[in-house]
Amino acid sequence: MANYLIAPSILSANFAKLGEEITNVIDSGADFIHFDVMDNHYVPNLTIGPLVCEAIRPLTDAIIDVHLMVDPVDRIIPDFAKAGANIISFHPEASKHIDRTIGLIKEQGCKAGLVFNPATPLHFLDHVLDKLDLILIMSVNPGFGGQKFILEALNKLRVVRKRIDAGKKKILLEIDGGVKVDNIAEIARAGADTFVAGSAIFSAARDEDSHRYDTVLAALRAELAKV
Image 1 (cartoon, helix red, strand yellow):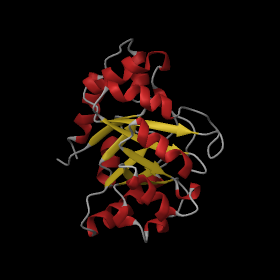
Image 2 (tube, one colour):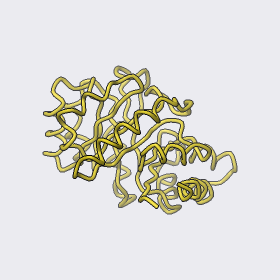
Image 3 (cartoon, helix red, strand yellow):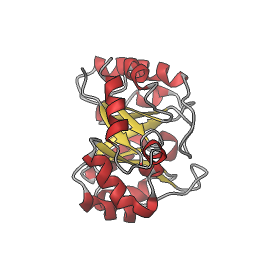
Image 4 (cartoon, helix red, strand yellow):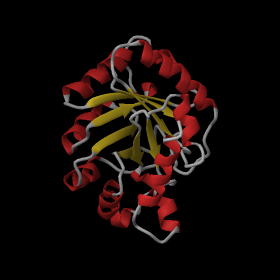
């Protein structure tokens, strides 16, 4: 079985108990913490910034995977690097010079990712693929949690997986949006190896009146074991 990684999105966590939520989900077997940053400009929502990242950094040694839905993006990258981010991903539409933005992330000591919305063409990979550590395919339109998975994302995953496998560099292929127990195996077959899940983890556990996430994470991994 491939080395699949699960990255709970804290967008769906209980922010009144955010530290507890993060500790519990990592103790329950999650691999990354996915950190969604929205600016009410690039996307129609406003979430959290570097101060929250800085506050949660001491709580876990897990990778903090920051997804910047921010335009312009360059100004805030050093702030998140200083706050403890390990991976910083951005949208090509939010950068005037994509190669320069990737370089800025690397200069700050972080790994760099490029994010593709459902209608964003993949040609942005053409001249920077070898500089990336992660490619994130959005299977919903960014801005809100709990949306339905857009099936066309599977085709995008297949195309990107072929491009990654044709190269020599290890690049994570991440999916974000509508990932659940009943579709994670199909998504993995299309080529994803890193799975962002928010409501599927945090909301499901709350519905069972539990602050432990062992059951839902085990169910996700059981489906991945079938691939």
